[in-house]
Amino acid sequence: MTAAVPGAPVLDAHEIHVRFPLARDWRGRAVRHAHALNGVSLQVRRGEAFGIVGESGCGKSTLAAVLMGLLKPSEGELRRLPRADGRPADVQIVFQDPQSSLDPRLPAWKVIIEPLVAAGRGSVDRAALRARAEVLARQVGLRPEQLGRYVHEFSGGQRQRIAIARALATEPDVIVLDEPTSALDISVQAQILNLLRELRRAHGLTYVLISHNVSVVRHLCDRVAVMYLGQVVEQGPAAQVLESPRHPYTRELLDAVPRLDRPWPEDELAPPAELPGNAVLPQGCFFRGRCPWATTGCDRPQVLLARPDAPLHAYRCHVAGTR
Ligand SMILES: Nc1ncnc2c1ncn2[C@@H]1O[C@H](COP(=O)(O)OP(=O)(O)OP(=O)(O)O)[C@@H](O)[C@H]1O
Ligand SMILES: [Mg+2]
Image 1 (cartoon, protein in one colour):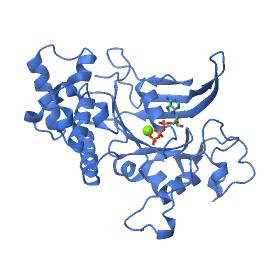
Image 2 (cartoon, helix red, strand yellow):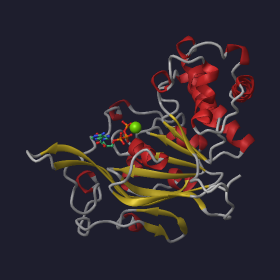
Image 3 (cartoon, rainbow, N blue to C red):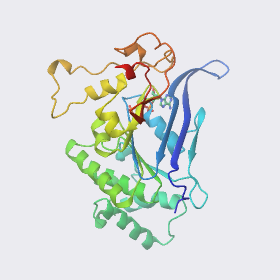
Image 4 (cartoon, rainbow, N blue to C red):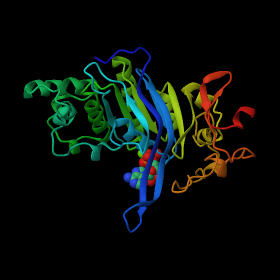
């Protein structure tokens, strides 16, 4: 179905910058910007689950919009591997809140096959479309006889199942999951994560999973990138990054996750320090003002350095390798 270049990335983001205008002068020229992405390079390979983790405002959803082709970078380039029909790789998305991302005026079965129809790839036959919606519904654990209902008539977890069925409809090359469980009840979160895992196993799907929740990424991802202030500060195989973090920010992020084997002490319940504003970017290392290791040399911009003993694991810190 897709052009076969073995091992070639489906999505290849190269030095992506995104700036949003915050204020304009009397001529309408932007004079202040939010620097949402500041040189993000990453590759998503077919069949992998790639996690993107970082705290609120670090640029995760902006990156999702770029990967989807919905937002043009201010600088840099996103390459999407061409499919056999010459069109760029098909990327679908599941948003955090299915209530607001799904059309309330359509019955569930029409919501599910909407992307197929929009892409001009659906059958024109209503019965065939309905049958396709029923197949997709079964795949995500919904009963086909429920599909005449409207989105508001489903529970939160069921709504997210509808959103997932919809993302599957075009048999996309990549599914971007932007905080797919953070609007759900804790009991339902695990069900949706397990569903995503099963679907990937059954259909060989490729995921980009975005979350501020490290546990979610740990549950589902093969590789992970950690973002801070619109940059990737650490990336590599999930086991290496999450079990042996090198960058001081990743360490802070992981320390903030309560674990069953290591309960959160009362006096550590304070939330992590605030992300600095992105209207004026720090000089040198972006994390410097908050870093316990800050020293000479941190006033220079940091590049990603490969870990000598595990070269797929890289971190943007000249001190980390010496600790
Ligand atoms: N349309 C916009 N106009 C101006 N600034 C924006 C716009 N969209 C995003 N930003 C800014 O870009 C930065 C990154 O936002 P983004 O939504 O990508 O963060 P995020 O990591 O997804 O956060 P969250 O975890 O809260 O969803 C933030 O500072 C945000 O305020
Ligand atoms: Mg977001």
